[in-house]
Length: 430
Image 1 (tube, rainbow, N blue to C red):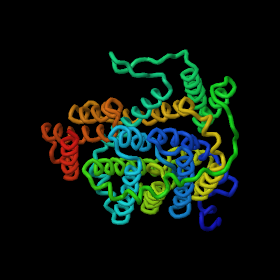
Image 2: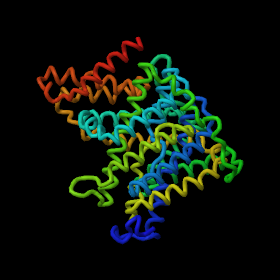
Image 3: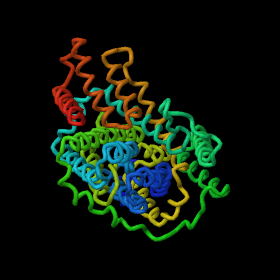
């Protein structure tokens, strides 16, 4: 085992790797409760989604640890789950079973792109500024969903949106959770989001907002969601679903690439500005998406929270294996779903949104031809309640502003192809 994971070469040991794996798990364990809450809004069985989330995270982390040997854990991705629930299913009226088939298709395409080496060409075709804008826009969208689910922001017939009733029990609980989580993270506690959820849950129980009906229980059945992606695969061959699949693929593409580079760099695993075993890491990520879709959850992707484990010494794939073990153990804690309400998970959504919005600083705002598509991408995601719409508008305006500016040669042919696809997308919707 030590030889396989290169403990001696990496200067690590079992104790350090175990601690790192546990730290990573605690930093990302919030997804076990946030994901069922988000996907449950589509009508999916929350117990089944809880189990599917844990299974996808465990299998994905095992793939990454054993195949790619990286200290990177995986789980259903934030942003992609919101897109799945609120843009695809609720916003476009697509059945969740068909949406799962779209996730499955994106995972299979990702595998093909990885094995054939086409991935690099596509990554290079998308301008860095638009990649950053998409990440920041998703962050604002997630934060907006969090504010809504907490009741801090509510609908208004005159102004569309307004401040909610800050004296109601649910809103006060969410505000308490947000303050606690912010304090913990500000103090440098990496698992602050998870600890904040625990403290908020306890507060909810103490003040009678929720009632605890147990901690440990039997593993929920995945029967309500298992295999639905395969059963409804034939329903994905429409223009609308093509855009959905492209969005799943696009976001996972760059989220994974960015996470791999960030975590590997922190761990000192980047050699000569190249990422060793990058192909294996990307294969593990895409294979995890296929497994996740099969059992019943949105896109599974690499988690930047893995930096928490690396920060305490994790260097090998054994860190990811340990994290996978904790996700398997988590299957027995489904009774907690009854007390981890949307008011408890809302602070996690808001904080993740803050972290993702940091990409705004890297956009070249001083160049108007870039600022316009980037701004429209970021702005329209929360305003239209659709990640796909934000991406489409940004990708339509980018070639227009760049051509007018005389920078047509800088536009990759793939971007022109995406321009046509997204124009047809809007024509189809109208």
